[in-house]
Image 1: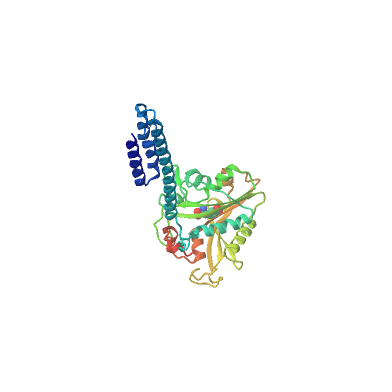
Image 2: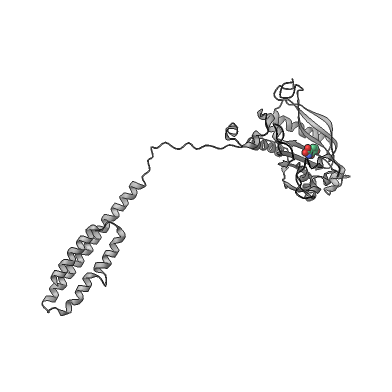
Length: 339
Ligand code: DAH
């Protein structure tokens, strides 16, 4: 029995030396020292020993057990230390490596100029409203006093989804939607995307952007329209900017006008940018047609208002000297990086 015990001690010692993983240690302990382990099994045979031998063998077995426990403990500490060192090596960070230069994004020129326009109108007490891009024919045309036979309704201009649903061709339908919901005083701008079935070229895109404006209150006059839009032009293009209003026609305003701003490139002297006229057309505007007020549920006897609409893409191109609207939609990073 003694030889068997010595054998087990040796065997265990060898096995333990070969171990190199922490989780193998617990199976090692079970294999040798567990309830059904090798050492315990031998001790079961103690019954057949003579009474003199028993304590000796018992003592030896305890010694071996204590020895193995100590060895396991030692090995555990060793392996833990190694594992820690390995982790420290694996997770080492070289703080001297230079940082990666990340590409920093910037705002799209349309967003930059729209933000400016919003700021200008917010400063004059306007609020910002939005409306759907997929719009009912009713809001896009009917309620804006655009009759059935008006050329703006031609299928070549309008993307029809069904007979009664279109992709809005301008931001004006939101005028009606806001009038339906709010009571005067109303003072809003409506920036948004609009759609027209145009061939793509340097000045046309089937998707472009407008900023609509609507002011309704008691005693609003053409003077308010001119004053507001003149301030707007000076804020956007610079304090030297002058404006002029030319008579025009829109179905939803009466009277209607187009506003020109003096060319910022030549200060009105005439240059290539303004086709040597000194002026640049900026927006359409007018006093809201009484019929349009009525469509919006507002009494034209009590209230009046003015409205305006401008093409954002054209204004962006003017401000930055961009000569092709397609650049705004292609999103070539080499173009966008310049803003
Ligand atoms: N909706 C017009 C267009 O798309 C622009 C416009 C003109 C809007 C005059 C207005 C306005 O609100 O009063 O061409």
